[in-house]
Length: 322
Ligand SMILES: [Zn+2]
Ligand SMILES: [Zn+2]
Image 1 (tube, rainbow, N blue to C red):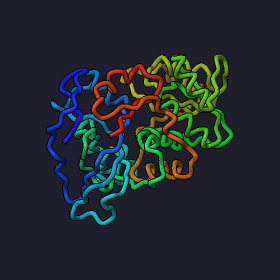
Image 2: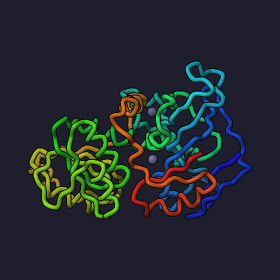
Image 3: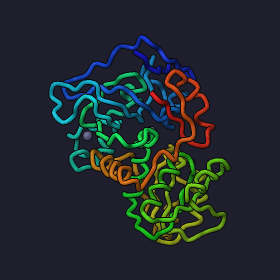
């Protein structure tokens, strides 16, 4: 069967002789229907993260149709369309036991420390597949996982209807955070240097500003330390800073700024199983949010190399139709 494999930096190839997935008794085998290309996939592609082994199957933001179910699976059946929750937590460690599965100490991260799923068929634990209604648009499913990341950050911030929030970054994550805020009745005000990205996000309902200040809520989605520094100058005392972007760089903020500003600083990593995926699905089914607004470019599976090659420069998200 077909699979998209990385063999080195900027070397992605669609092979046709990849072995069929080996599924365990608690797994389902899914025929891929689509997959979103994400920044973390690109960090492997660009060589910023080491490949765990080569050739390495990439990709994690996928949906498809169940073709077979394992012997112990009783609540899934062949033919169902599912989105994949691509972080398989152990559900047994101390963090999992208190509900913070996103901080699982033994988490299998699809495409990162366990093989990816940009393949014609792949196995996944049934527990981490979510059945979706047939009427949902495939483009919404291709963006479902990053939408869940964004929605969960907004939920964890505890922001409520009627507020305004400063959003740093208008890439896919900034856009999906903005959509989540709009769905909640919050006005997102976005800072984004890329003119194409800024135009898109404003068209989708966000505001933009050069000089507004006194924000009580800030969402950092860029993972670029200087971007956060620019946002800090616009906060009111008592503000809540929620960080989604990742960088090993030190924070451009002093203890004194946090204390004098009386800020709440919180990190938000992915989502917790299974409630956050289910809540996100509820929003999409009720048509409160269209995650597909993040998409600008569609590629066929056979053109996966082209999909990856230009992904960083595109104004929006790239997805591959399986
Ligand atoms: Zn992702
Ligand atoms: Zn765990």
